[in-house]
Length: 435
Image (cartoon, rainbow, N blue to C red; front, side):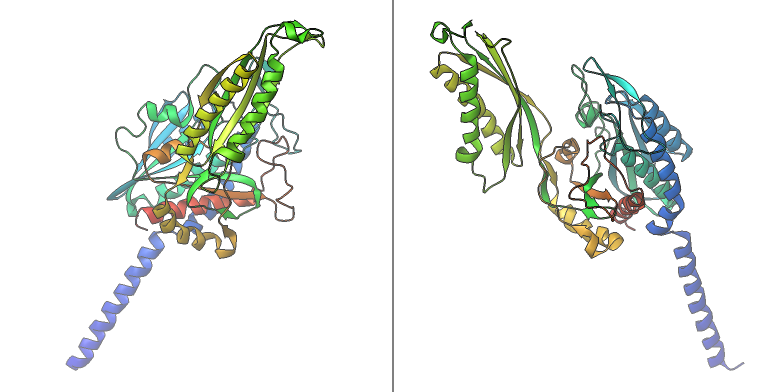
């Protein structure tokens, strides 16, 4: 054979081997879409089981067992009993690299379900001393099921991952029962990030405010901080026919409510960030002809800026005290600090937005407006760069603008959206770990 022919044959063989090697490598590493197709039905089955067996905050005992069993079946290192019922698992990738955290919340709400489903919740429990129905009215059952699916996906390709994954199944996002600690804050307090802090942390939440399969992702402040307050207004009881003989705390409370409205409308710079102060209850008095000794006001503060948050709290207490004083009454303000502002790290969002778009397409990725609801994912994002995004779950043939909202007894999830959530979170994780 002529030397040139031998060289040509060798070159062709090498090209063929290189092509075969590339094809084999591709075949050995399934895509996020391929992985999700394999696990989609499992995710739906898990979700339905969890939906039928909801558990209130810090009481997610059965839920944690379901999660633990699945994660151990995948061969992961699993820790249970974190912040009462939380489950944490570590997946070690085949190559060195960063640690990322993926979080799902587990708890249900004291809501009686009215949706006609074969797997509708019939669960009952006690909440603040009352018998209540229990329902996954905020979609945390879907969060757990989707993260279980993501865990299975990533285990299948762990050898190709350049880094590790911390799966965080968190209890009590809706708030711990009175007198208890819970949620993200307690997980961190107990050392969740102590041994090794994730370099990035990701979370996802379903919402009825978008059509099924759409993703909402916002850079910077995304969800508000939340603080609850109680104002006790004390006067002096007297007969309703002789108000001058006492001090009327009802009138003082009314003055306080009116005065507090000027905090947002006149005293803080709302061009910097929006804010809300709302009163949710007024309790005081028992008869039409008795002016009581005391009136209690309770409410909430929502902000998107930490300095403004502190300013509003100071002004609230000041207005309450001074307004009461002008009428001879006294006012004591107690503020229970809630969740911080949920802030999406701008650099991380800029990095991951094209990744999310590659899954859902440009038309299905939106930047939602600021959300005055609060989320304790915010605590993780204070510790390390975080990204929290939303998955629409309202059926496409319904108007998402009028669909029953999260926390409604009529809250409904179009399960076709779950595969979008699983694929998106899987792709985000793969991209964060060099895939």
